[in-house]
Length: 323
Length: 254
Image (cartoon, rainbow over all chains, first blue to last red; front, side):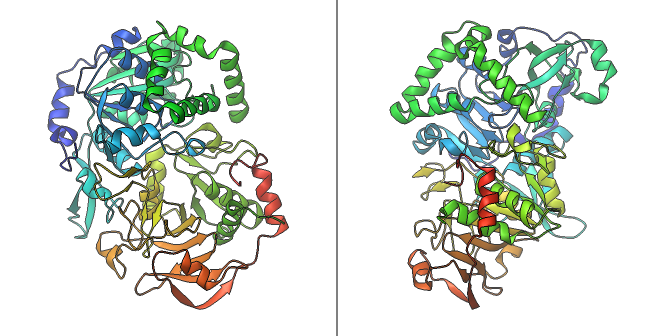
């Protein structure tokens, strides 16, 4: 439970580097099934989730982790949304590390987060938004910490156990934001070629840093492009294929969350989901998981629950906003 | 003209923003305040949103409910990513930062994390800092915008999520925070600042029809007084018209 001490696995840059050195960094084909991709995750893993809140959430991978009944996970995400609630209700996580958790203003404070955190069932380790970003950045840089001016003086320092460091030049004490090397990164991107060279439109969020920080990288993509397309626009690649372990082609792979320029988040779906929680508490999430995670055998079956008309409508809304 | 609490807050907060500046704005009232300032008196104001957005033009009727969805970045000038957006603030490019909170104390410290004394088993778990701690640590000036209620204005917050002046005096600087600090608290009752020595909250202006006694009644700690307490000018028809145009369905302005 409450554990103010940093875990060496978080910031041990030497061990993190050794893990990469002993791993194949292949330029080969990464295309596979979502089941095979998620098969690389084991109970107890620390999983960093790409996107932010209800933007570009790797929903197909989240769904498969739940289907695989993984447990004792630590979930790390800068702003956590319904995917965190699913993991809590399913008993998949024992700890979440985040700066903020709920869905958004109209739906109030997450009752699911409140239920599991207030009862002490799940530990919520809170870091500031920038501090979490810098934890991934430090890991992406391969160093044990980066100095920063944020989070000092607040009670957040004691929650995560952040230390300070004396600047050798000015003699001032700065925040020493510790690296965070996740076991696995799960990300959803706009497009990638079959080798895993990945492109993101719109908000980059923290995905590029997360991919570099993690040992194992699992990606879903809205679209699979040809090698030639990658080579014609190499400036658009934000994650190089050699650090990607598995790639799955999943159109609408974030739904009902949004994917920039492609489809807007389904606010009505959030409203119905939270209304059910208001009425029946965590039981409503279990019912939701039975209907949206367990029952549909494939992701296409899952999308059919929303209906083609709805998906087309969300596409039109996104185009209108980003035109 | 009837003015809702959210409209009053948005108008009063917008007036604090000067032209040729930058502002870190969250969704809801802060975003409306920034958009209103930009349209009315500060056309060279740049809005920055923590989802990784610089210079958006909010689409009327399509207001974002989170800081990192497509709506928040409508017609933006740059989408630098979240970490790099906050690093603009750390570098010193952000003049103003807006924040709200479940609890605010007399030194402008804000709690958006937990109610109760045991962080790991709280009485009430709140959503958390998001970027508020970073905004409070890194912007040149922090402006708290909130409804004014006694349960919110407490002598001491249960948990310091976002540092104000900590325990007053020079405690903020001594904690390692070199810059910034809370300059203004904009509430449904008036405008507040901080004594430059003790850093305790003081009354600077009251909204029309609000008395000094009324403000104290709604505050859980003794408020100091500025040398002169003025009265704010009520929202003008022009301000309200502009503000309402952003939110025709009145989802945020109430």
